[in-house]
Length: 275
Ligand code: SAM
Figure 1 (cartoon, helix red, strand yellow):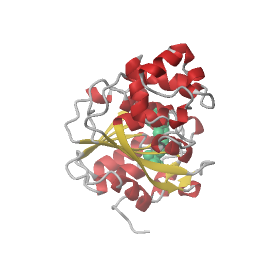
Figure 2 (cartoon, helix red, strand yellow; figure 1 turned 60 degrees about the vertical axis):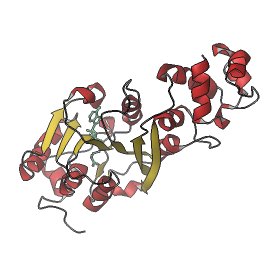
Figure 3 (spheres, helix red, strand yellow; figure 1 turned 30 degrees about the vertical axis):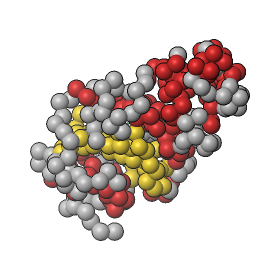
């Protein structure tokens, strides 16, 4: 394995700092720096870019991002045990790593005053990954403060993010992602790449904000997708009964006999706009 920097191997860092993985924090660490570079490269050129990373842990992905020339990494980590290991990376790349100790779900990323361009890259803790993604997709102002999101999820969640109509994985998350972003599956990562290995395969997903998404209220879109996919096997005339039923469908010019899974993102926006 080729070294990507002059810092010690991650296995040594983890044992020296006693970073036994905590399940409650979704800690599955990546040890192969070539793999972390592959993830970071998925975000495209990093020169001159400030990267926000959630959950740097012992810093495998952080090191890859910095080695590829990012201007700066702002990393939010909840586990204070990781801070000394991250401080060593900060010493190796002076002035280029800022670590915020805290919960990413409570971090006001937009208000951190980070100068653009900004990209978000993270191997997300499984327990908070989807919520973080939804938070990044919902701001009123669009395009958002970041240029792209390059994120690792359980493969199952990755499939839901990129799914569009007529796909079994298509649902509320797919509609939200399809409404505001171009989302693509980059590659899979097998359980053995992590320490400890998780039970399932993971996937790296790359999302770029669409400059001009279909005008639509996020709340209304959420209302229609919640109703429609809440009873995904039923015809829409039944599943959207509580929010307007056949009258709503007629207004949006959508056949009441169709099922949620067959509606495009554009059709969901039309329904939301008729609410
Ligand atoms: N980036 C490292 C890597 O790729 O090896 C670690 C990834 S590990 C899957 C998830 C990391 O997120 C852990 O370091 C964990 O402590 C951290 N974490 C968990 N919940 C968090 C939260 N709410 N806010 C910030 N960090 C969190």
